[in-house]
Image (cartoon, rainbow, N blue to C red; front, top):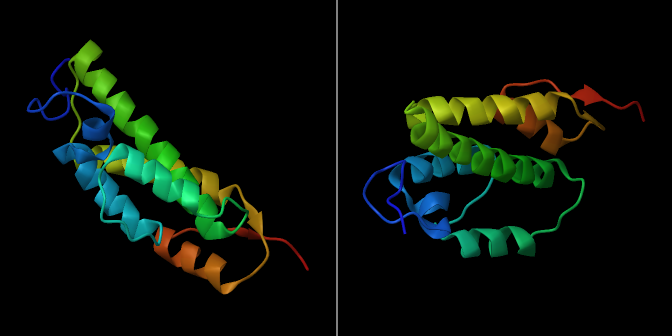
Length: 134
């Protein structure tokens, strides 16, 4: 087992990397506020189970949650690889910013009917989502 490339403190496991590690935990906790999600767990299996229990539908918050999870895993994994293979490091704020940019890009490409949930997402993410005419 190798040491986590993000914190250089603990063994690198799925549970540690997603989202127990200090860097990934800071990113995940910040993301949770942007996806209208309250979770106290930081274990990978619990996170996945929590997402699996939620409806996977076309509601805007369901889409936001899935985009955030995918972008977080991808962004954290890229940062890990960058530290291991290129000896380049970013702060958790920078990684978080890249993840948010990725989620924003996907959200602004959506078309949706007007609703209070759409307005909430627009406010939280500081974006404008194109509307479908009823």
